[in-house]
Amino acid sequence: MARLFGTDGVRGLANKDVTADLALRLGGAAARELATEVKGRRPRAVVGRDPRASGEFLGSAVAAGLASSGVDVIDLEVLPTPGLAFLVSELDADLGVMISASHNPMPDNGIKFFQAGGYKLDDAIEDRVEARLDEEWERPTGIDVGRIRTDPGAAIERYIAHLISAIGTTLENKPLQGLRIAVDAANGAASVTGPAALRRAGADVVVMNASPDGRNINKKAGSTHPEQLQAVVKAADCDFGVAFDGDADRCLAVDHNGEIVDGDQILGILAKSMKNGDSLPNDTLVVTIMSNLGLLNAMAAADINTVQTGVGDRYVLEEMRAHGHGLGGEQSGHIIFSEFATTGDGVLTALKLANEVRSSGKKLSELAADIPRLPQTLVNVSGVDRNAVATNEIVQKAISGAEALLGATGRVLLRASGTEPLIRVMVEAATQEQADGVAASLAQVVRENLSL
Image (cartoon, rainbow, N blue to C red; front, side, top):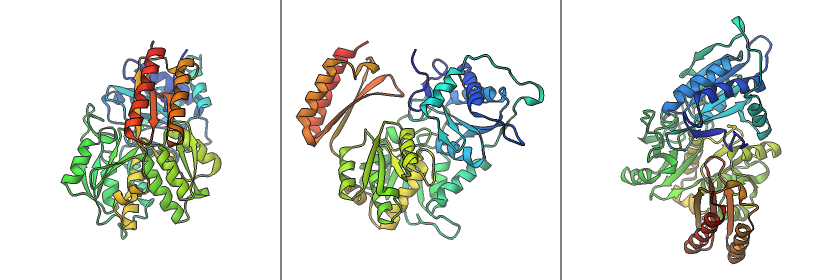
């Protein structure tokens, strides 16, 4: 039987794969596994969601599961995933639940959990929660059931204050004053917090796609669809632009020329800045196996160590916590600053990047030029057996042949997606033509030999 949890919680088509019944049972199972009695009060959980219509009933179901297990629930309503993670710690909660499918299309939704302190669950804890889904248990009654209250405003204000403090913003000091920044909020969870934080830090903000209606999240908008942002940055004469995804745990940028600056380049820019300021712990940047070889080469030239993990910002964070590293992330724009956050935070990343542009006196395009990208091609192959990549001899032989062809000038990576039913074929090479050709050839081998 397939594992319920993927690389970022439980995710699928809302009301078919991710149902109210599943949300109810997951809330109860997580409560029994993670919410413990605290002297003087009942266990406490916080619940948040992105603006998808399905989040309304899924959030209510999760809250019901928690409360029926004897947990008091604070419903924070719509806010970014990193805001929920921050408020788990800030509000001294034992458990946090975020209802979101991140960058996925509107019909999807997901449920991800945070333990005390605001950290995502590791695989072992997720497995224990899943094992409790159908267990027999004694339900509390009377005064022992949990209560549910809403607090959508004051708690989010604490999150925004925390964000802007990370770049030294005060009533007197507006570090981003003089910058004109375009913001694409993806009609998602940061539609309010993203522009608000940048404005309070002094920036002149041009806002787009910040009118969520429950149906338009990520629709030709945000970090997965940057074309509109590229056009607006140039048309509005902005210094640069930033794009969030639906739950705002990632951020990509666009320079004044309309060129995309991806997560790898943002990581490289900020790692070099932190090293120069003696604030990069262990002179180390944590990235994933999907990070571009160009970033690794640029970090080596800057005497910055790189450590690679599996794909998923929680694996990046696990490595950071285990060894005391301060900065890590993914090419997709999940950037983690361990001093300020326990997960990728798109708005925090935008603030940090803007602060570096302002303090360096350079354009974003100049900073990004120091982190060149090798040509890279990513092909998603659907309708195949995701678990057979490592064992199919023909596929493995094709991979070995491609690696021999590329040599030291590139690399090949095939992996099963943890959030979607497909295999990702990634190839980096000296030229775009070579990367495209090798990726297309490998994708065809996968289709022919792993089709369901």
